[in-house]
Image (cartoon, rainbow, N blue to C red; front, side, top):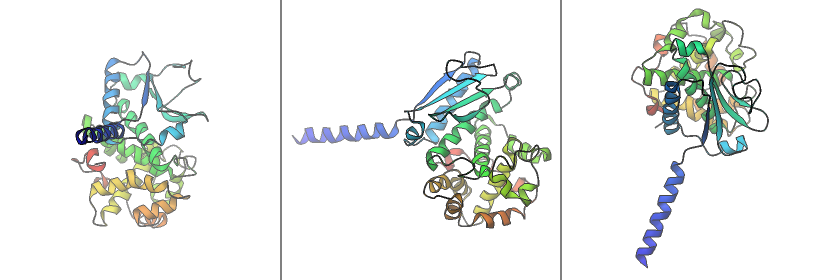
Length: 289
């Protein structure tokens, strides 16, 4: 009898472990016009991301269905006419009844082997991660655009640097035409898309990424490691965001300074990026361990 009881307990533990380790379901809908190499890399990237940044089960509630569809294609007119009309661009999109991820890869990126053809996967996945932690508080009215998009931009660049040896972040930050000094003088403009989408203000979310990197740099001054600082920005803020009606409260609770205090510190920075770039040897696993 005792042996049977022990076996029963072992089975329960095994079952619970299996459930705990079960990955959130992403359903792949990949257009046949994408090269096989891209499809293989897409699946590899998704495997890594799901291992390092698992998506919480509460995503099913927001989606109103178990799992999330991903639609991917090389630029073409109406790639999935049987599903949606006029699908364009890459985003976490919704129609009021559910949400999905879509990834449009321009032909030019495939022909010239631009690394964005892969980094965009990490960028959009990171938004799903933010949504799951924050209980869907990702819109302009709920969270600052610079933290949402800047965080995703920095994360995707760290990913491709680690796995492909490409460092686009430094180059983007050094290009003056990509972002404006308004980041330093009027940072509140970067809290919303509509006030920071003019040409040269936040190209490829570079200005927002600069703000995120400055925040990490300021957090490091509190005697915490670079890994811990990035964890606060990439993960802990979004967990805290779920608990509060206003993002400013979550910001202060997470970073131990108000948004206004951060903006004041930000105003003292210049367009010198060397000191705020992530360390060369920093891995995403170090941050999300």
